[in-house]
Image (tube, rainbow, N blue to C red; front, top):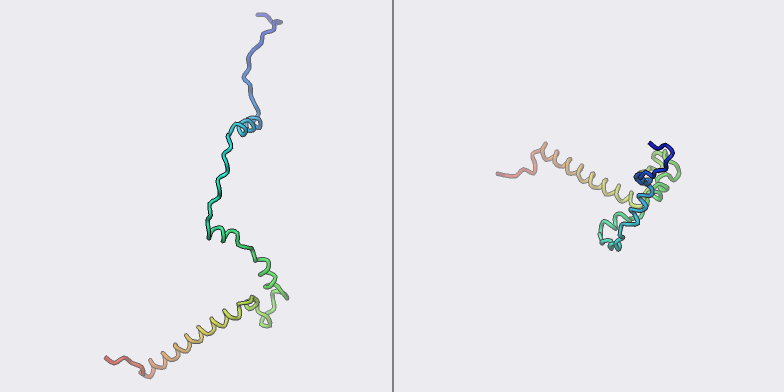
Length: 113
């Protein structure tokens, strides 16, 4: 064998991963962007403004441990109306319950057979 001879040996060409990605990205043909479809209620709900910080400021105004002087559940604008509605429905139910027990105890208001 010739130790000092200059023979050219073909070696496989290897590329780095980054170079391969760049070449592949350039080779891919770019399509025109597809127009986004209109999704109505989904777009409305996903793009709805975030009001959490505003509500948090209202809830934490004056501290959070105020007790009966300024209860946390009555700080929002509509809380008093909701509380009044719930109290009225509970009051009507309690009145009907008392009337029902009275009629049951006295036998009044029976349906005749």
